[in-house]
Length: 305
Image (cartoon, rainbow, N blue to C red; front, side, top):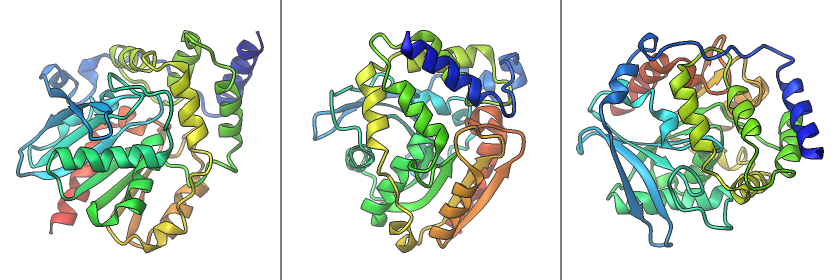
C-alpha cells in the first residue's frame, strides 16, 4: 500500500507542471515511421566479461561509427523512430545496455562505470577504435562516464536530456523513494505512468506500447541497481579536460532534467553547444524524431569536415 501511495503522489507532483499529452498520433503522422517496418539487423554479442548485449546495427561499415545509449528502463528500441531517418554514411549501433531489453541482467554492477566499460568492450568486439557516443538520460550519464574513462576513443559526444548531477534534483530524490518500494513483478501502472511522464507531445500509440513493453522486461533488481549506481555520478570537473565536439540537447518541458543542468554541462565541456527543443519533454527524440535525426547528421558531418 505504501508503494502505491508513493507512486500516486510522485506522478501527481510530476504532472503538476506542463501536462503530458495522450499519445494519439498514428505512425503515418511521424516522419519516417513507416520505415520502421524495414527490419534492422538486431544481433547479440558476448563481451569478455560474460555479459551478452542485444544491439541493432545499420549503415555502411565504412561510415562514421555512432553508438546510441538509451535511457532508464528503455532498450535499443528507444531509437527506433530515429534510425530509419539516418543516412547510410552513419554506421549506427543502438545497444540495449546491461539489464535492459533482451540483454543479460546480472544481479549486480549497474554503476555508470560498468555501463561504460561494456561500451568499450563492445567497441573492441566491433573492431571500432573510436566512435561518436550518443546518450539519452541514463545513457547520457553512461556516455559521460565513457568519455572520462576512454577519451581517446571518443570522436564526439551527444547528450540528450542530461543530468549534471543527481544529488540536488528533488524530482530524482522522490523518484528514488518510489523505486526503493518496488517489488517483483514491477507494478505495470508504475511503468506506464513513468514512460508517459517523459513526453509532452504525443507519440504513436503503437510506439508507446513498445516502449512500455520493453520497460516491463526489467526485474526489480535492475530498477534499483541503476538508481543506486547513479547517485554519485558527477563528472563536471573531469569533463573540463574533454576536448571533443559535444552537442547538448534539451526539451524545455523536461519534467526531470532542469535547465541549469544543461548550462552546467556546457560550462564544463569547452567544445560544446546547446540546442533547446521548445515544447518537448524528456524523451525529445520520440517527440521530434526528424529534428533530432537532422541535428545529429549535421553534428556528425561537422566533425567529419
